[in-house]
Each structure stands twice: as structure tokens, then as C-alpha cells.
Length: 322
Image (cartoon, helix red, strand yellow):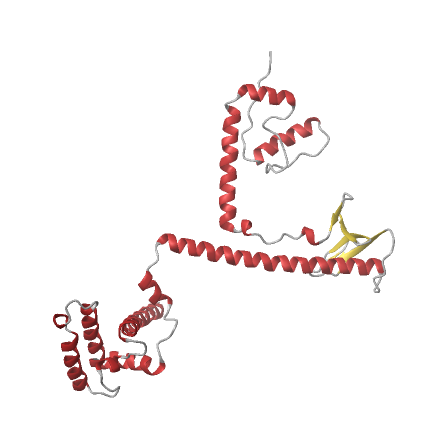
């Protein structure tokens, strides 16, 4: 416990020292930028005071008094930024008179001021608001999510081509000479070893596939054929990033709720719709509901009700005529 407290204390101490040094560096960065903007590009603390970089503290004090008489606001009435230049001169003199601060300035004087001055520097200077920070985070995370979508899409396309090539090689042979008709083959989709139906160790997951000309299908247990082509891969889309997806979902929920309320407030229209066979439980494509299987009967009615529930709407009672 004592060791953890000691480590925590040292971490806080190091953080405080780094922040203090960084604050001093930020002050130097601001002065360097301001002096170059007002006095000319390449102007340094020493050249502005007209002293050498090896000048002693008394020499710097003497040069400061001489320069302060020239820049005093009383002698520069009507001159733009006279007060700012005079105040800036005092800060420069105080830095060069302090051994510690002068050592920090001499480091940047010899090595140059860095172009990137740290996130803390720019944040303390510009201080973006909450809205700006939120917008930046939304754009950053959405951009990263879009990049991940592109990477996954390329990986899926590559995976589809590999599976198609395996199926064709199993159906047509190593030379890939096309054969007429359908060819049913078993293809390994990878993964660890498994136990097959006969109790033998099989390499990875095996699936039944059908090759017919240029088309490759996955054979489902019920006999359905699922095409294996690049169209089955989901392409990247800005609309599927988290923020736009959230906004779209909210808009759709509000629209469905408003539509359900309008339908409940129109009983006459409900009777006509019920008689016509389309009512509020319609499973039109694009409504967001799962369409019931064909065949009608009770199963179709139950599927329609569940579809309406999945779509977020509220099923209204159908008025019966006496």
C-alpha cells in the first residue's frame, strides 16, 4: 500500500513539474511569435535588446533600460501597439535576467522553436467550445469507422474470391477447365479441426457448395442456393457510421410513431383498409418489418402482426360492422 502511495505521489509530482516547465515554454513560444510579427522575421530576444547571446546580467539590464526609454508609450504617443511592445520588452528582460528561464530560452535559441508546440499549447490558446470538441470527436470517430468499413469490405471481397476459387478447383480440377451442369462440392472455410458426422477429424468448417458455370452457390440444408459473389459484401457507406446511423434511426422511429398516431385517429380509414386487406399491419418492402412467408392463412396473419410490432408501430383494433 505504501509503495502504491509513493508511486502515485511521484506521478503527481512529475506531472506538476512537466506542466510547470511546459507553461514556461508556452510563454517563450508566444513571445517569439509576437516579436517576429512586430519586429521582423528572425528577431530574437538578444537582437531586440542589441546584446550578444553571451551578455551578462548587468549588460542585459543596461540594454533593457536603454531600449525601454526608446519604446516608452509617453515617447510614442499615437504609435500602434506601443503599450504592448513596451510590456513585451519587460517580459523579455525578466526572462533573460533569470538563469533558469534564460537556459530554457537559450535551448530554443540554439535549436529553434518547434513547429508543433503540443496539444496543451494550442488548446490553451484557442480553447475550443464544447460544440467544437463534440463535432471534432464525431468527425474523427465516424472517419475511423468508415476506414474500418473499407478495410472489412476489402477483406470480405478477398475472402469471397478465395472461396469461389476453392469451389471451382474442387468442381473442375486443378486446371480449372469449366464443365457443364451443376457440380456439388464440399469446401473448407477454415478454422480449427472438427469432428465430422462419421466421427472423423475434419479440417475446419466444411460447407456444401454448388458450381454452375461462372456462378458459385452455398447449398443450404433446405435446398436453397445462396449466391457467393462480390454483391454479397457490404460496401462502406458514410450513412452507416454511428452518428448518421443514430440520427437516421431516431428520425425513422419518430416517423413511425407519428404514422401510428394518425392511423389510430382515423377509424373510418381503418375500416376501409381492413376490408381491402392492407391495414396498419402492412409489410410493404422498405417498411423495416420482416415480410411473412407466402401461403396466407393464419400464419400470414400472425406474421403480419409480428411484423407490425417489429416495425415499432402499435397494432390497432379493426372495427367490425354489425
